[in-house]
Amino acid sequence: MENEILIQFEHVDICREENVILKDVTFTLRKGEFAYIIGKVGSGKSTLLKSIYCETPIITGEASVFNYQLRTIKRKEIPFLRRKLGIVFQDFQLLTDRNVEKNLEFVLRATGWKEKNAIRQRISEVLTRVGMENKGYKMPHTLSGGEQQRIVIARALLNAPEIILADEPTGNLDPDTGKQIVELLFEICHQGTAVLMTTHNYQIVHNFPARILRCNDAFLCETEN
View 1 (spheres, rainbow, N blue to C red):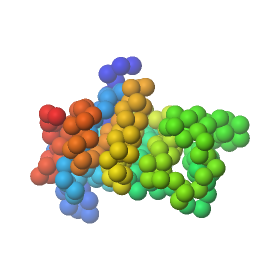
View 2: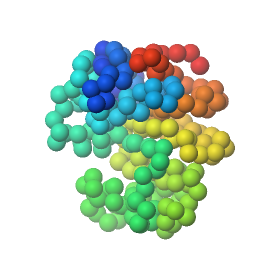
View 3: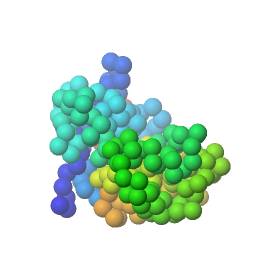
C-alpha cells in the first residue's frame, strides 16, 4: 500500500541514561521513502535510530514502528520487530572468524531459517543485489571498507525488511566509495524499501537530494536541502 506509514513518532522524548537527548520528536516515515537524519556528531542521530529498534527506551509520547507500540512493547516482541528492520552500522560489525557466506547464514539461522537450499538461495540473491556475488568465500578482513559495507547491506536485506536504518554508512569510507554506497541505498529504496540514513556529510545530502530531518539543540525538525 503506497503512502503507508511505517514509523510514527508523536511528541516523543528520547533519553540516554536519564539525559534527554531529543525532545518532542514528531515525524513519520512512509513506505518506499528515503530520508536523511543530519546533525553534528553527538546531536542524537544514532540515538533516534536506536529508539526505533528498541535499543534506547522511549519514556514519553507515542511511537509506533509497523504495528508495534514502542513505549509499551514487551521484551519478547522486540526480536520480531527487529526482523522487519535492516540495520546498517558504520563499523560493519561482521563476524571476523568466518567468511561472508557464513556471516549471512548465521543471521538467517538466528531468525528461523532451517532449509539449507533456501538459505543458500537467499544468500546468493542478496549478494547479487549488492554486486558481491563472487565474494561469498572471502573473509571480512580481506575485503575493502566499501566491500564490507556492501556485505553489511546484504545482511540487512536478508529478511526482506520494509525499512533499512543506516547509521553513518559512509563514515569510514573514502568519498568515491561512500558515493557508491549511497547510490546502492537509493537503488534499494526505489525498489520499495524505506531508508532512514544518518549522516553528517552534507556533500552526500547535496549530491543525493531527499527528505531531510535535522537534529539540532535537542530537537528534530524538517529542513530544506
